[in-house]
Structure formats: structure tokens, C-alpha cells
Image 1: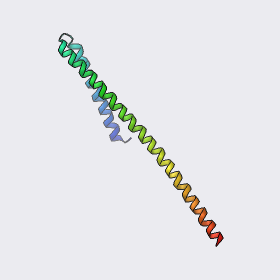
Image 2: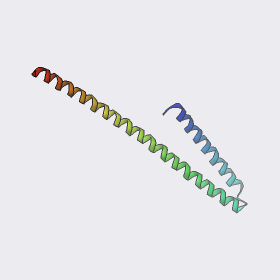
Image 3: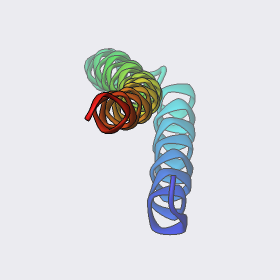
Image 4: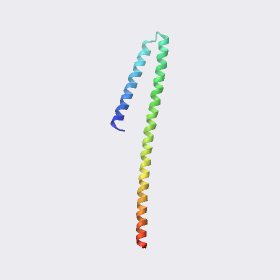
Length: 97
């Protein structure tokens, strides 16, 4: 993860925390008006669902990056083995001639 992405993630989480705290405060302050309280409770639930969804996406992306890295490593190891085998074949061919 580069610094820009890390900064964007921190900004996202800070904004999410501020938003949820603001909604919590508004929910606590609006318990008298039931319509407003219900709307804020729904908003709070929707924001939580969005945050969990984004968190799952970020986790999935991180896991994909790890898997891609492992696959690249396996590919590179395979290419090295192929190069070694080609060199061995060439040396056998030279010895036969």
C-alpha cells in the first residue's frame, strides 16, 4: 500500500467516525421527535451497512493483492526453472555435437 492510498484510507475512516458520531449525537438529541429519531436511526443503520461493505471490499482487495504477489512469485520461480532446464539442454546438445 502506498502513502497516498494509506492517507485516503485514514481520511475515509476519520470521516466515517465523524459522521457516525454526528448521527449518534443527533439521535440522542432528537428522542422527543419520533419521526426525526426514526429517520436518524435509519440513516445510522444505512451508514453502518455502507461502512461494513467498504471494509469488506478493502479486505477483499488486500487479499487479492497478496494472492497476486504469491502467483507472481510462483511464475518467476517457474521461469527460473525453465531457464535452468534450457541451459542444461543446451549444454547436453553441445556435448553431443
